[in-house]
Length: 113
Image 1 (cartoon, rainbow, N blue to C red):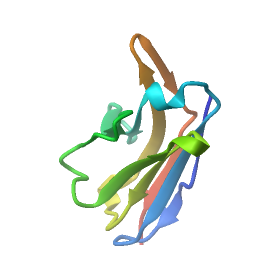
Image 2 (image 1 turned 90 degrees about the vertical axis):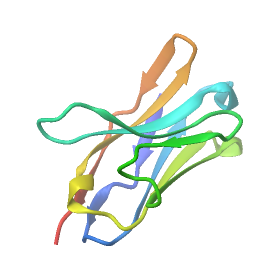
Image 3 (image 1 turned 45 degrees about the vertical axis):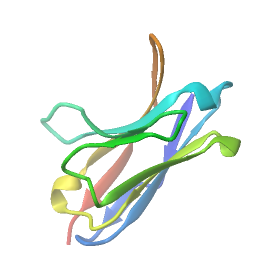
């Protein structure tokens, strides 16, 4: 089970931090990621971080978002800075290990003045 938190309404240029806590053993073995889905659009990758802390970002968020993980807390974070209206979406936490893929329920982020 993946439980997300931290979404909300923020003005353009503002910041939010999303958290996702996993109730799963062997958390360190999973590649954790954040995806987002805006209304009328397909779900897209935002960022991933694997067990060796290698990160990957979508071009649209590079330099603004930072993904990190705390293995002691089974938690992955997404620090979102310099938010833009086009970042508005439902953000989903993802955990992958081989053929296994798990999703959180999503948390809404709205960037608007």
